[in-house]
Amino acid sequence: MASSSESEASCRARSALLDSILDFGPGVARGGAQGYIPRPTMTETETLPILLVPDKRLRLKARPLGAADGDAIRALAPKMLATMYAAPGIGLAAPQIGEGLRLIVLDIQPKEKPEPLVLVNPEIIAESAERATREEGCLSLPGQYADVTRPARVKVRYLDLTGAKREIEGDGLLSACLQHEIDHLDGVLFVDHLSTLKRNMILRKLAKDLKSQQRE
Image (tube, rainbow, N blue to C red):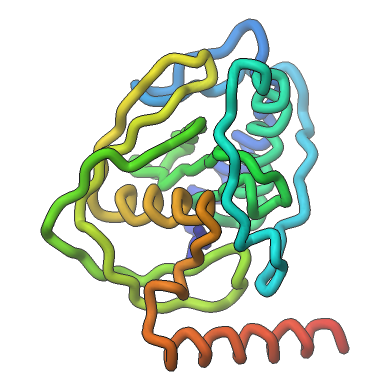
């Protein structure tokens, strides 16, 4: 999920965190109740190219991760976080970087400091009848934004990086971000929640913008 703005304080915090992202191996530090942040032992983490619409891989359904995928998760999660922060964005799903895995990362920085979450096999297990509308963007549709209506609150079950089962409840921006990123795991984009007219307008504008960038 794209971030429409970034404060100077958030930028400094993001840069500091990028310097500390590393291998999710032995020695991880707890980062809040829902996730883990690695201890700093290296200064640079590889970022990955983000797929853009209309790449067909964005429409594929991702597969669940199992015990045999532990090494792949530990290798991919820090790169996904680094890519998300560098974009900059507040959420990223594995299919957006060409990996058909049910893995998402996000950080809405609720206290104006990095609080990254890594969710393995996330699934929405409850949602409110109440609906909420807020503006959304997407790193796979750069520069495109629209109001999207979704359940106002959701509860999500997932596995953390240790394989432990966890649940997280969210409303507001957290709820929207969770739903947006989980949609990606099923090949769904935020524009799919819009009217056909609005969706086509956005897709045409994106195609025009990308074509213009290629000529520059």
